[in-house]
View (cartoon, chains in turn red, brown):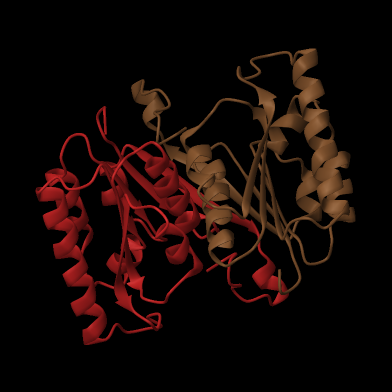
Length: 172
Length: 172
């Protein structure tokens, strides 16, 4: 980044958090920035990964299992999340990226895979020029307090109410 | 689209509406869909356009002037918006795309470049399988009523309050 980097959070129960993170990755790549798109909790191969692979300056990493966590996280879930956290920690320490996106990191906190204090630690160690973007429902007040920009995606109307499931190329 | 297409709206005063639209375009392209990304009101060359051009199945069209409309739209603004509306109308009529994104179309309605009834007309004529995505602040209740999925991006905290202007590769 040419200028000071900020901390952005996308949270709330509405659609568009991960989608906005993908959009931001693409926009930043278009501007020539080096981007890390680190996805927690999720391990499924999504359409967006195939798309993001088009950009040589976007690195996509997933730190979750193929199955979503439904109630209690497995040991494998915890292991993968901790591995991801360490990867991101080192990437920030070594100033490897201009834009670092931690997709669904709030959900990882929600499931206690790591804590909001761990995320705040990342904010503290990030290089001044690095933009740090954190997404997922249930961002804690403590984390929000440390962020520069917070957007709540609020569900006003949703076709899940009509019984439509997540569709390839649209929701996943 | 393989299945029924829906009508999505991203509105509200928060960040991430256009960004989510870009993310959706990329995700859909990754799934092999043909995407139209039509941007109203704005005519500036943004980082995202350079990025979206990487995808041969995404078509980017801008129907605005280089300068944003500050108060009263010029004749040129109205002309460009109407031209864009006609383009989108024909593209839907001829079933040319799987996913049609009308970025900032709500702002075009806000500035009376066309009406919400005009947008509803597009919803009515769209092929059943086409996904139609409309973004921008100030979505009207009448339009929301016709949509399947509505997300409000709500500003909780914004660094504009700290005097940071829109930055290349992040906001534009």
